[in-house]
Length: 347
Ligand code: TXA
Ligand code: MG
Image (cartoon, rainbow, N blue to C red; front, side, top):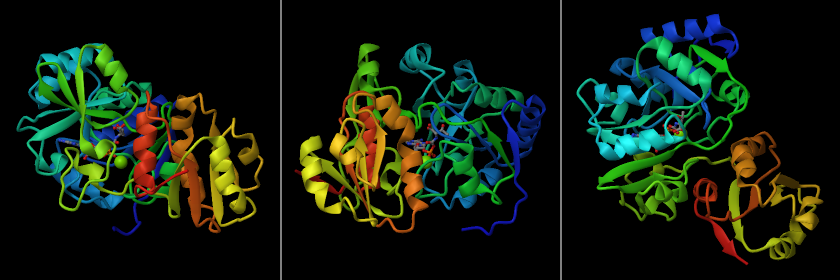
């Protein structure tokens, strides 16, 4: 991991001059963290391969894990990759928004962006600041989530400052990210068929409703065996992990309460629960993630909660409910499963 040495400038998203300055910096190859509706991105000019390498260094990210390029308009996609009708259908329906599509890349995209693959992942964020930054810079912005590799993604400027200050040139503070989980990633299999590589804000239900047949890459819901390769290389890493062990409990509120009773006074344990889990929510060491009926709220708070546990040195064990897989719940399920290293207790 590289030494901290860069003088990081922090600017506010409502400072138009600062966004112009950020766009100039991006054009020249600097590293700028910016808000999107999913999570914060760590942006670099995607056309400058040598500078893209610096992003991997700043994050401590393995170089075989490719980056997503961010554009301000789906019309620009053709400059960087080969588009087809299915891409156009997705673009019309869901872009700008929290969806990333994997397409065959054109030569203009350096292999440093794609980790050596001949495909590139492409997304058009909806966040106003992100789009302004991309269009003012006039280049595609390659951006992974703006966290140190292995830590939960950053959903506020404070998170970015904590992971990236001293490692990058600028951080744009645009407040909390709306969705709070990374974008849905799909590969186009052909003929209105998609492969879901990572679940996110655009749900399988929404994709099916738009006329697509959706199959899941195994890495979305299951642990891969030794040597198995996921279609999205990043899905093989133990992402989203707080420093303490996470254990998921598969059972309703009363079963979880029964199981966790013995830990209620234990300060080395954190109990994640829903507002509706009245008995658990009253425990001294409980952390309410939101209503069990409000998955958007749960998604919005998840990474901030996981990160907050890293600041409480006493905590060694985290127990959380196994999320429901419907809607955006599938994305919460996927992130929690990975955070837990697939540790689930069925009650
Ligand atoms: O919401 C998001 O997608 C955020 C914001 C900043 O846009 N970005 C993000 O990037 O989550 P990152 O680098 O943390 O995750 C990118 C994922 C990785 O799992 C990577 O393996 C996958 O996208 N990916 C990138 N290019 C790919 C490709 N050509 N084929 C398959 N998967 C790819
Ligand atoms: Mg990431």
